[in-house]
Image 1 (cartoon, rainbow, N blue to C red):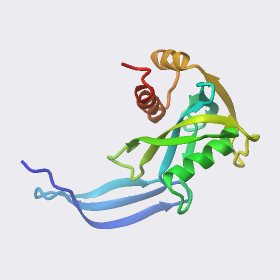
Image 2 (image 1 turned 135 degrees about the horizontal axis):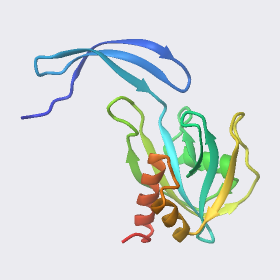
Image 3 (image 1 turned 45 degrees about the horizontal axis):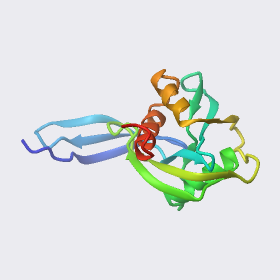
Amino acid sequence: MEILKWKTLSSKYLVKEKWATLRVDTCDLLNGQVKDDYYVLEYPNWVNAVALTAENKMILVRQYRHGADIISLEIPGGVIDGDETPEMAIKRELLEETGYSFSGAELISTAYPNPATATNVTYTYLLTGGIKIQDQALDEHEILEVEEYSVEEVKQLLLENKIAQALHSTALFYGLIKIGALK
């Protein structure tokens, strides 16, 4: 049986905000069924970084995440603004969140956080050669600590399930494979 893309018959926006938009679609499933209440979240696209300093330390950030009500150890990243390319966005985010600038940036993963109900894409970059060049320049509501770990320490954090954000754990596995730390 061939799997076909659904046909959107209509869309109605229920919420339209800067960080999230919720719409409800009526879809023809192309198998004789019509689904009249399919909810879709429209988020902006995101970027994440597996960031290595010039001393080969991995940069992680620790911050409070209200949705899950946890203090979360994560990789740096954020939202792609306006007409930024993903690479421009990740370099900006790293400079703002950590104060580090990087000599190399390579796209290592493109992932959909939840393709069943959300429209956004997360681009993960491996950044290398990081050097601290300034203090943090955080957004109004950002409060985060920058921490450095060895590659072995990050592997242990993953094994101990100490990095709760699923996209960040995935990104770290990609990054560790890319640098040859996982075989």
